[in-house]
Image (cartoon, rainbow, N blue to C red; front, side):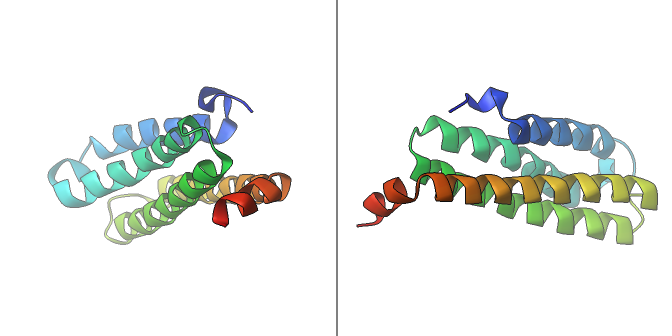
Length: 128
């Protein structure tokens, strides 16, 4: 299996976090510390959990952390929706980020299913 730095989902998650940091450093996010920081934490959590799961060196732990990463993507999508609704993100910027987060969540889901299918016996052994 690849190092986490080689995983497309990790790379995309990192780029998403960087792009969101850049957007949220400007007004009106600059003064809304709560929402700004929550968006940043959720965005950083996506690639962070991918790498943490991979570094634990078991498929069971990787799958567990991929689920956490996928959950963070859901949180982020909600936070971006709220930011758009209150006027912090225009429709085009929101749409771009929403598409990227949705795509990333789908890729994480596919990765999880692949791992669970390929390593079903290994995962079953750990559950006993």
